[in-house]
Picture 1 (cartoon, rainbow, N blue to C red):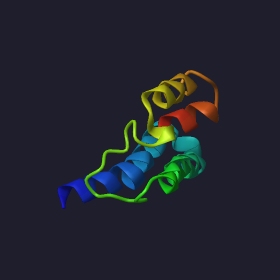
Picture 2: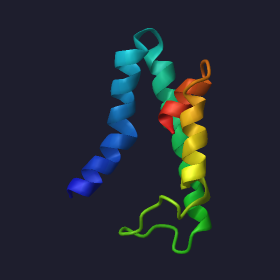
Picture 3: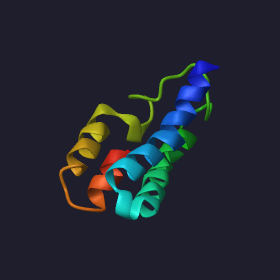
Picture 4: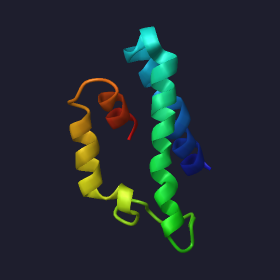
Amino acid sequence: MLQIFTHYFLHFVFPLLIAFLFFRKDWEKVYFIMLSTMMVDLDHFLANPIYKIDRCSINFHPLHTYYAMVVYMIMILFKKPFNIIGIGL
C-alpha cells in the first residue's frame, strides 16, 4: 500500500508542490507541463506484459534508461519550458 501511495504522490502531488513553491507566478501552467511529462510512460506499451507490479521500469523501458535520465537532467540547465520538462521527467 505504501508503494502505491508513494508512486502516485510522486506523479501528482510532488509536481504540484514544486510548481507552487518554485514557479508561484505560473504554477498552473508549470504543473500542467509537469503532468504532461508523464507521457514518457507510454513506452510501457512496448513491454510484455504492459504492467507488472513488481517490475522496475529503470533500464527496462527505452525512455527510462540511465542515458535518457542524463538527457532529462541536462534539460534542467536550459531555459523555460525545457527546464520544467526536465524537472518533470
